[in-house]
Structure formats: C-alpha cells, structure tokens
Amino acid sequence: MKDKIDKFEKALKDNFRYTKTLQDKSKKDKSIQNRHIIKFELKYWREKYKTFTAKEYKLGWRNSQLRDTQIITKYALPFLKTVFKRVSVEKGITVNNFKEIYKVKLTDKKDRSKHSHHAIDAAILTLIPNSYHREKILEKFNEAKEINKKYHTLPMDWEAFKASTIILIENEVIGNNLVDDRKLTQTFKRVRKRGRIIYDDLSNKKPRIAKGDTIRGQLHNESFYGAIKQPLIVDGKILFDVNNRMKLKDEIKLVIRKPLKYKGANDDDGFKNLSELEKVIVDKGLFSIIKRQIGVFSFKEALDKGVYMLNKQGGKVNQIKKVRCFINTKYETAIKPHEHITKSNKEYKHHTYAINSENAYCFYYTGTINGKTQRAMKTISLFELSKLKLKSIDEIYEIPYYNIYSEKNQTLKLEKIFKTGDRVIFYKESKIELLDLSHKEILGRLYKAYQFEGDSKRIKFKHHIISGEMTQIKKIYKDVTNPKFLEYEPLLRLTKRNWNFAIEDVDFTISIDGKINWLS
Image 1 (cartoon, helix red, strand yellow):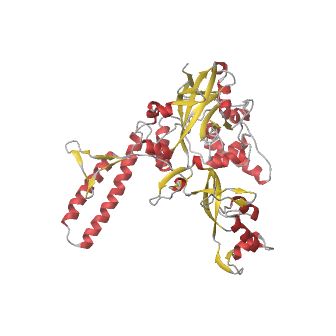
Image 2 (spheres, helix red, strand yellow):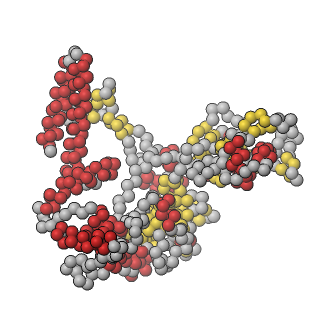
Image 3 (cartoon, helix red, strand yellow):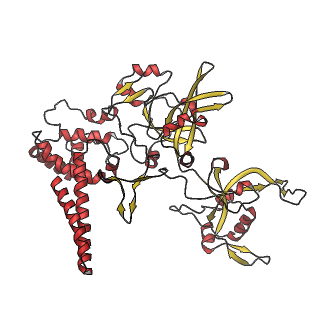
C-alpha cells in the first residue's frame, strides 16, 4: 500500500514537470486531466493507508464513516479468519429471521430508539450456526411462514436458553459514546501564494499556518425581528401627551411580517383560521378590514382569492400580502446581531433582533447556605460565547461574571460547565446511597444532558440508552418533571428542585469498558 503511495507521488511530480514543457493546448489539457486522476488515486491510497495505521480515534473519521467501515469490513474478514476457526458475515435479514426463530423479536419493526439494539444484534450473531445448519433452519422457517405458521427452535448447544437473556441485555449495557465538543476548536489553514504553500522552514517543510477566531455552530435562527411599543389605551381611547404625541406602554414586543395565506398541513407559514390571526396581528384595524372581506366565505377560500386594502369608497386598492405579527419570544431574551447605520430616536429600534439558536453551555453552581445545599444555573448562547473570544471553555472559571452566581444575597460557586452529552447519576437523598446500588440500578439512573432552557432554568436529560433524533423520540415518550426512578423514564425536564445528581468527572468517571469509578 505504501509502495502505491510512493508511485503516485512520483507520478504527480513527473506530471507537473512534463506539463510545463508542453506547448500544444490539447496535449497540455490532456496532461492536466491525467494529473487530476493521479491526485484522486493518491488521495484514496493515502486515506486508506491512514485508516489502517491510525493508532487513535481521529475526529475526521466520522465524516467518511460509511466508506471506512466498508473498507475495514472487507479486510477484517480474512484477518479474523487467521485468528478464529469460524468467521462468517451475515446479512441483516438473516439476523432478523433468527430473532424470530429464537423468540427475541418483539415488534415487526426494528426498534432503533435505544443504543442497546446493537448489542442485541451482536448477541444474535453469536447464536447463528454454521452455514449447513443455518440453511436447514432457515428453510424450515420459510416453509412455516408460507403457510402462516411460526417456527421456533433453540440455539445449538444451549438447551436452557431463554429469550429474556437476550432481550434484557438493554438493562446491562451502557451507551458509552465519546462526546466531541468542537464549539471552540481552533480553525487554521496553510498560507498560500499564487496557489503554492509557503513554508517557514524549508528544510523540515514546515508550512506557514494562519489562524483566526473560531466559533462552530449556528449563532441564531434565520429570521430577523423588529421591536415595537404598543399605544397606551384607556377606555378604548389612545392617550396623547401635551405635544400631541402618542403615549406608549413600557413593554417592548418583538414582531415579524408573515405572509397572509392559509396554513396547510405541510406549511410552515400562514394561519389556520381567523381566530389564530386575531391573536397575533399587531394592527387591529387591519384585522377588521380582513375580517369584513372574508364575510361568508371560508377562511381558505377568501385568502386564496386575495384580501385588499380599501379606499374611502370601499374599492380595492392593494392586495394585503403580509401582516405584522407578535411572537412569543421576550424582548429581553432576544439577541442583537446587527446595529442599524441610520439610528432612530428610540433606542430599542437601533438593532435587528433574532432568536437564540442554541445554548452552548450551562454553568452549574452549588453552595451551602444556612446549612442547605443551594443550586443555580446560567446559560450562554453561541452568540454571546463568540463575543468572549475564548481559546478554551475552561477560561470561564477565571471570569468573575461567570464563575460566581449572586442572587438575593446568595453567592454560589461554579462547579461544572455542562455541555450536551455530559452524564449524571441521580440519587434521592444523598450521593452516598449510590455506593450501595447494584450496577443495574446505577444504569437505570444514568442520564445525559441534551438541552438547557435559560428562560425557565430547566435542564433536559435523556436516558443513556436512548438513541435517534429527539424529534422522533418525543413522539414516543413524554417529559417527566418529577422522577421517581421506580420505572423506565427516558426523558426528564427538571428544575433545580430535582437536581439531585452526581456529575461525571466531578464525582465519577466511566472507563472505556463501561465501568463506573467513584472519585470520592
């Protein structure tokens, strides 16, 4: 493999020299095409060689995980055959059939909502016999299936086999994935001049590296909002000051222009009915015009025909295509990504506003006040984090605004910077009680943090065995706000009253084989 890399590296250098000597355009173009083919081959063999010689997990591997897995599988089979007597590759449909044969399959559709399904598949693979017996069993299974009957048998050489042995694996395994936090990972690139890499040290071929400020993730949602104040109304009349200016309420609200159209089942924008429009529209006078024109028509039919502004005589002037609406987000929680060049005399109109896309970290504070343990949290958005220009999140521990939480004469110290994927083990009264629990009971209380709510001061957790997209998981399970840990509770949404947990890397660590080690 290394010989092929050397071969293509030499071919690439020769191609560069040869191309420079050519004068004929068609020959030169052909040579450049060959150069690109050589580059493709060289990249392929370099990456393949790197895959087999790598001694530790590389972050970039996941970007080509499927391709690398295919290559590894291709070469792993002959290698494993040199070590073990019997090695075979089984199709997914074969594994699925043997689940039915051994009474392990509980549902028609494979449940991928738990990481344990990988362990169950691996266990079934160890029970599939050699090709001769496998084909005989599958033949009987398919014959029974054709006449709508079921066929079951026990695994070979395991007379006392019970399906529960495999099914209950999910209570014994731990989802021990490695969390990769790259929000502040530094970006860099090699400096080039006219396409060629510049080297600081030619003897060691050390390229010049350019670095910059980095933040990875979506700073805010894509929509932008405006800010307005509503007029002060008493007894149905708008109040004015001595200068005949409209008096405004102190509350500032965020607004956005939405298309005036019917909202179908698959639409993101629009309104389902007139009452939904009435709840959010800013201009109530405009709403009266829309309501009057809808009249006896259905809401959908009226909007499809079009609703218009009317003149004094009641004639149609311009079609109303968009209406300004309030949004539920509070002004205080919105972020200000842009500042207007031309400033209004109203300070709240100096910026455009956007909604925070995600809270990057959760700062968890603890302390003892009057003999009782007190807890608190702060969140920081990616947008706010980007302004700090940190090289490492650990620098937060040195910033007074973040390393101490003060409220109502209470001062709490920053104990942990939570990120998505950090694990905790819940207890009822004290951390000491966890030492007396069995491994199975500990796994029942092991959860991962997956979302931090800054407004409501809540942390969301999911059971360590849960897998898949959270949007799909939430369709199956509901959030539990007061957990008892007497049964399987996959999703938790907790306030500080229920933050009774031991924290990974503070109170315990989990080794690569899933063993839980207590630090204190």
